[in-house]
Amino acid sequence: MSSPSLLGRGPSQAMYSFCGRAFRIALNTCEAVSMRLNMIKSMGDRSIRSYFKYVYAKIVFAGECSNFRDMDMEMKLKIEQIKSAIKKRWVKPKQKCLATWLEKGYVNDPLVTFIIQSHNKSTQVKHVVDKLRTYSKAEIIVIDDGSDFSHHVSLMKYLDRGNEFLLRANDLYENVMYDKTIRLANGRYLALLQDDDDFNDLSWVDEAVAYFQRYPGLAILGGRDLLDFAIDKENHRFDILIQEPEAEEKFRFVAHVNRAPMWINKKLFLDRLAHIDFDFAPFQFDDVELCLRAWLKGCQVAWYHTEFHSLSAGGMRIWNNAFAQEQCKRNSQKLYLLYKEREEVIHQSISNQKY
Image 1 (cartoon, rainbow, N blue to C red):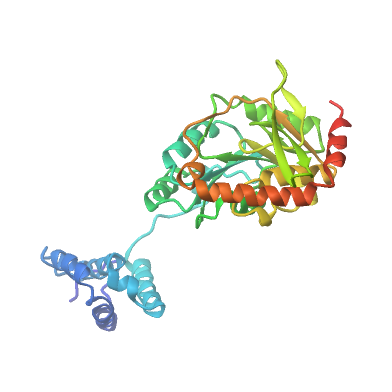
Image 2 (image 1 turned 120 degrees about the vertical axis):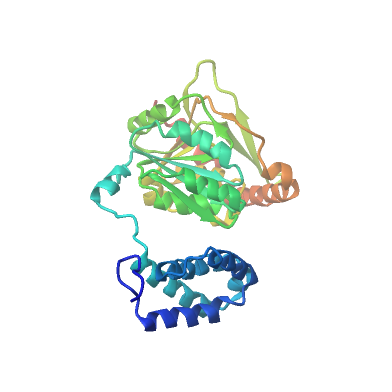
């Protein structure tokens, strides 16, 4: 009589034989796996139950060996199919139900979505997310843009709530990933953040929501620099001008703002702006272009006072300064060509705004 399996029934001789043949053919070439399996076999239990534990372990360990990674896709799929079949029959999975789904606390209509662009700064991201979690009815999306595997795993384990999502990208930078993530977000108002941003409390969120509700045409709201621009036709230049707020000034309509935080009214973005201009990819001045286009599309752009500060120096301008300078030169010329005849129209729109 055969020993009982995990479900109390012995497997058929055909199943036993099939598994043995399949795994000998597929996996015995992997030296690292064989060493581990010899250790398992040496533990002494020869029952059918242990045999299938042995088989299952053999599949799991296979993923760690270079030979498995070098196998063609068809062989990998066969191994995964066998692994899945054995797991379904002899390994009891954690049972799911409506109650466990509801416990996750997923909300399909958040008022606000926080979008954090990140590269190799998982600790700083977790520091910021800890604070953002205290805002009710919010969605949090972290873009892991080409981070090392350890950072990705750290964020994957940490973002474990119903309205927390982790997107993985292959180091594509802000232009591409903000544009894609805006379309995935469910919030009415979207806060675009960087992984080195920090703040003391969430008053900046409530204030932003209040401004959006007060000004229905407000498409973009920035909490960093108060910015203007000038066209120098003689030298074919687009000049960015940093302005200082007046004493106690909290809000002003401006030509453009930068990240972060940069707020987006999602409906106005989709209806009138449609996209972040890919011609400015991978980064630099796409936020400027988006704001100027918003004015031409009949929307409003504004700055408001926040108490944001930086957790660390920006990486791109330190570690790849030549690339950053190249992008600055290239994209500033694009701005000049796009807006050299539109400066007066944009400034007139700003001066016509009523507070």
